[in-house]
Length: 346
Image (cartoon, rainbow, N blue to C red):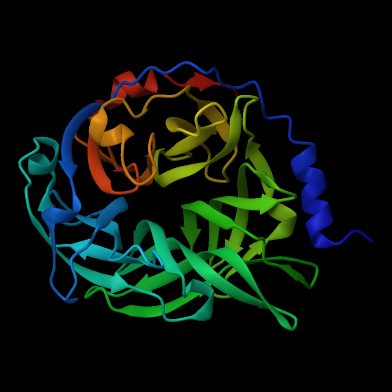
């Protein structure tokens, strides 16, 4: 009988979801605001950040949002934490009228599996709690060995942003468990009590492509039987992944950002996809967001726009992302114009 990992390798190898996209870039987003480390004042930790990037964003009441940046305070071991800002008026955000923000660290390493950092959050409110998906960078016990892995982690935060629970997902199938060497870039779709449909990006057989699955939130397991490839890298790409949280468009349509890493110069370029509530791909764009000026092109990781927050506000689609692994940009586009750029495949 095939082991769990081998079953998933066969699914990845059979993935025919290529030739869906072109290499074209049609950057439709307006640059509304840049935020750099000096724009954040950390209120509950004595050091100043040297990098603030790859943020999540979450709606509050009264047309306000919280921004959740990934924070770096030193370059010796490059250990990340995740902060949350005070409430920010959305209108001021897209008008570029925000200059300085107070931020408190709400998530930092406390377990071995995240001892090297808590990275790249994506958030969703469920009732009174915030569900935060993030990457735990650390060591995982595999038999007698501790193996270096990037795990897909989940933190539950209350209304005061206290962490009530955190752990990481494992893939299960007929009693067998598997923790991939890398499992990140995830987003929730439909959540019903303990069950969730998710977009995930586990590394299977060395391939880093976009998948979907069903998950148990209480057991922190991804159901291996439901893991299905959604979108593979194109010939000019090293890998692809999900970039943002998913935004509901209709009763069975969700909009989500994705990224491709180009072989030619290892740049991160982004597009959008529409999936159904189970994660099946309905429509996809070519690249719609790409680094194109000095603040975006040059930094700790040049030529990178990555993650992690997507919201719809009035007639706008707002993408809040990291730039070159040191800063944050607020990108804005007309939602109708963006949706004209996606091609329906089913």
